[in-house]
Length: 115
Image (cartoon, rainbow, N blue to C red; front, side, top):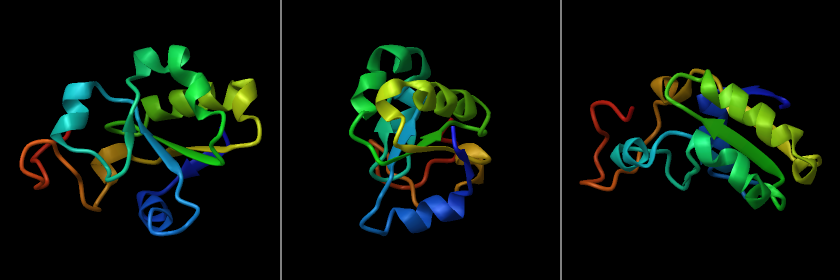
């Protein structure tokens, strides 16, 4: 893991050509209720089996509800040989700190709680 990144920095990066891969480690149900636009859902318990999916990434940001489990996920991804050249960061404060828009499977509006 390289470091933590603020939600504001993540939101800015999402508007650039160097958009990071945002990996939301919550359960599929939580992800469906609301997630950062363009993020991908890889539940934490599936991460060890799916880590090879990130070998082509230049920058990866992990996301969870409060920013604690995503630190562990970022460390796991960063320790994988295939991501040695990638910048791997955890979003500080998690979705609780995210003030940007969220996508949801239901009506597209920001849910009361995406956790």
